[in-house]
Structures are given as C-alpha cells and as structure tokens.
Length: 104
Image 1 (cartoon, helix red, strand yellow):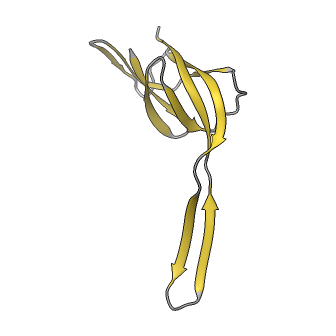
Image 2 (cartoon, rainbow, N blue to C red):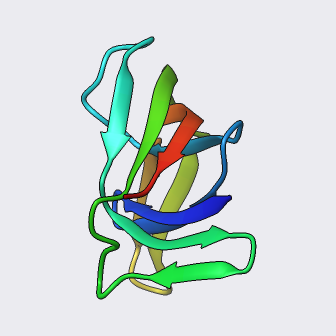
Image 3 (cartoon, rainbow, N blue to C red):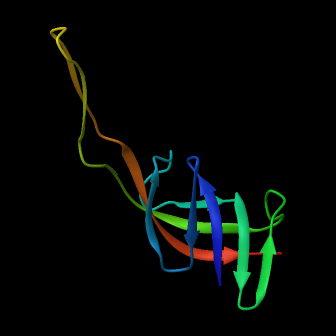
C-alpha cells in the first residue's frame, strides 16, 4: 500500500518504511505527526483518488531529524554596469520516517 501526500507545497509518493525530507515542520524530534492531506491511495488493484483529498485517510510519520540543505549560490550580474550581487541560501528541512497509512 502506498499513498500520495501533500506537504510544504510539494507532493510525495510514500509507503511505510520510507524516509523523506520535507519542508520544515514545527514538531520535535521523536514525535509523531499525522498528515491528513492525502491525495491518492493505492492498495494493490484498488485505487482511491481524492477530490481533492481522500476523506478519512491519514499518514503517520515519525520526525527523525531537522537540518539544513546544501548551500545554493545566487549571483545576479549585469554586464558593463559594474553591478554584481551575490547571495547564498540554505533551505531548512525535516526528515520523516513513514510509519503507517490509514484509510477509513
């Protein structure tokens, strides 16, 4: 059984036992979070597509860790104008371990 969930403005295909990095969530390490934004459930040949969400279904995940991704350099350069701007960015993330998928 696997599901397609939405969190942090992105969609992820998950099944129990998966580990994934999502946009930062406000939950302490070791806590369990429930994600109720389930877009689709697949259980063998049975496919349930939500309109837009599957009612009564949740995905449980355990927060493994929090961190920051690799540094991305942003450079704005205009030729012949003596203008250059350089910035960096590191995106914060939460690593989740999917424990259970429940449907009604």
